[in-house]
Image (cartoon, rainbow, N blue to C red; front, top):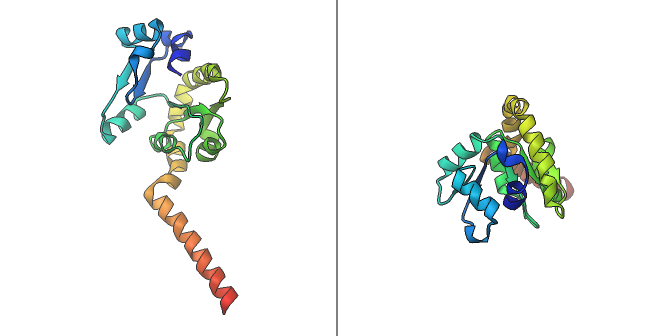
Length: 164
């Protein structure tokens, strides 16, 4: 994703912040120049509050994976009221619903039109932050607890109705 972004026209208008440890020595010269100019920044060993601040201060997040069990970073972005640009794994569609911008997994270069759309719609997306956060409540402890309680209640009720 970094290289696709670095070799596009996007760095002229859209900076990129990387969260986590990454081997910069593998970067192209173009990506290294983006670091030198401050357009690309890397944030490591950050606290949960710092992560929240970075996500809330962004126009959205990018997530790219070949296989994912669930996608916690997606839910974290939604909880901050942000859309997510990601590849089109089925689980990502389930987690993000209408709040995801998807591109084909085997065509990472297709992230560029989605990032452009995210940038062009940044004001609209900002206005939808409360809707996104409301959708994300299903992933917060209270929402998950409520869902599990419903599952358990249904199991108990079904068991009782079948065995009484």
